[in-house]
Length: 626
Image (cartoon, rainbow, N blue to C red; front, side):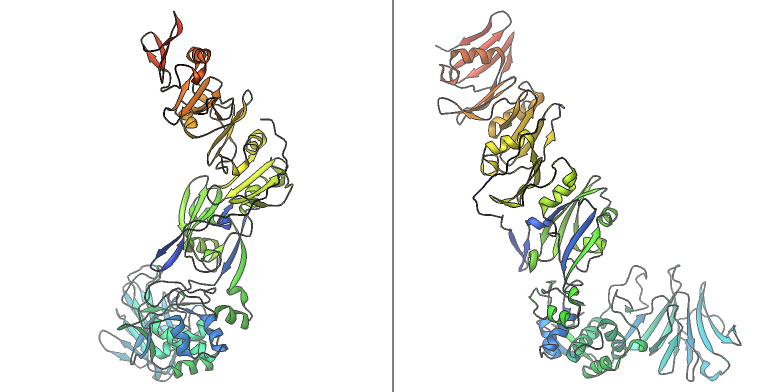
């Protein structure tokens, strides 16, 4: 289609951006309408830019926030009360934990020292391996349906006991040194080796240890030992509370009754004696046995590195509240990027994770309403050329490798993203000819070959050429058509072009120029087949009738007339010519009240005060009831 000249327009309007709709769910406002930065179209370089807040799920204790609160002078009990409101401190005495040592899937090799014993749990039989000075190490290994207890003697392994089904417990000394495949590790308590029913992991090695000794190995693995003593105490109580309850078991280790917790982030990181520090052991001792309770039960006290400035609601003591300590703690230790961050990620990560094909659009649909950008992302729509899917913010976080689900895609505006997706300055729109600016209820930017308009209700779409010129002549987004809701598209008949708008459409063809059509007239034209129907393309914009009552559009093949009392009806061919000869709507017939329809021997249209009938012998004749 021929390109219309593009002129920068001057508008004197206030930016009126659509307000977000807030819905209260459990006291938490959920933002259901996306803001300008909540939709991104495929960038030209294939990279998405995420601005974000926080590190982790944001429920319960912020570890960086606890450090910041300690620096502010809060004691550990006050820190815990801030992050777990409604809880109380209590004592859990005499509790032990069974900690699965991950990575030990075939055997357990322990340094043989004085006092080491091997006990067959079902029979109670005990082997005093510590009395054998010629045995350097003792191991328990899985061999099909039995466990074999062997000793390292003179550089080779020898049988130390007949095969047993176990479980087998290694116990006795104050600590046990385990030759873990990753690195040697030392543990308090006992090590229990048991056969697994899961073939790829035939052996489970479990550290049976007192709760406080378990927490000694957790706190320095979860929080730097150099942090504020009150933060370390708060972490000790949270870790003790979390560890006193069974945690969700990882997929790689099937659900079993052989252990309570694992030594990874699936529960809490646990490194045994080798991970302990003086400062954290002091924090554990200062809070000995203390756990958090909520109502009658011990709370499985969740925590994460940083909440970004708002904790996340999850029921019970997990409430949404602003956190003044999180950023302070992150800044104090020189890690501000855990509180606020910006990363770039390839869009291909999302395409692979969600099988979308080429991803064209990432649109945030819902947020939790708390903090910058409307808070954490709850729902996202991904529009690809193979499929469109809706996923959670956490799923996007995982697929893109983000620090949290509190992120924003506003580093590039929707208009600039759209321009890039259309080829940027090398595309048909060309280079920008002015800055992005306010429209009435949205934004726009002009380019050498057209314009891109955005509003929250309509999305972001391009308009160019003769259609842009016609839309502009009708008042841009301030006119009856409003904002575009499609890009310019080709008509199904392969001849013309069109854009749909909030209030109607503009159609162009080489023989009809660009014309707008809307409302009931557009509805009738569409019902009759659009441009492929008998009317073909519009040749006028919608106009008022001379009698001031109705509205009409002329088309290549006829007309559609509308009034409030008659609705919109088409009239064409010889019947239309006869009606025109009588004076159109000001004639004695008035307005059409039907489309043209078949009658025996011909065609007919009904009008307010009569009929026009056509047949091949008499042509179009008027019938006006007496």
